[in-house]
Length: 331
Image (tube, rainbow, N blue to C red; front, side, top):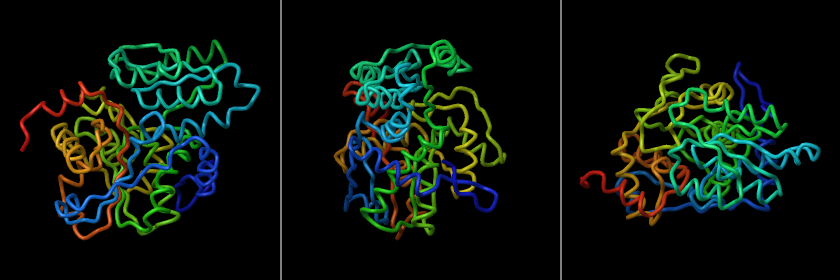
């Protein structure tokens, strides 16, 4: 599926992303693009927010999960699927498996946010927990796959998953046309790899900028080193962005197509959560507002430009949202 090869790098072929869009169309939501005159005035940019919190299972992850599960051969479906997740990928796998009649097991950290755990359980998937500090988070899932023959679905380092995530950029472009900049949260890099691949082929003038928490800057460090770097398990309120290393395949794509990776602090994420609530009318999880936080952090960089932002997810319950957004005084 990594079909296009140019200048020594590779990306997901646009045909694969379009095929993914057709494959998921029966179940995925064409998510809204949110506009705000107040946000435009505040930043000096023309801002288009692609609200993936309105996607099935509350985040963009459903796109890649449903695309991947749809392509499991019939002979393998009876053995089920297994995933490792900080929450949103697991909920997406559980939802897609439920829709396709597959058994799913999701391995999650013991302290997975309650909103995400309850979503996984709601869709009928089995849950296995592990300590968040576990060095090899995939070990238990890989053992289960070896014992059962189930299909392991990686959260990001899979071209079919990346193609599914790239449909978010495809939809955004179809709705609003060309952009000067697209800001995308980066965890393992699958969302960006899909979106960057799509934009490079349909809107090559668009600059791609990834956003990470300042304490979870594995991709920024990897870009500087020229190869994937592994960091210690990071501490950040953005649990969905708290990975220790980019994927090998996602890094190869993003290192070539992405112009810059910037970081934001937890306090900046909290400010962006408040702004999304007050100005956009959206209750988003910390990971979901990373792109918005980057825009607010450096508005001069984006002034006068057409800026797209992927608001990547909204799986946070009322109590946790209240707790997080009151962690420090506004201002």
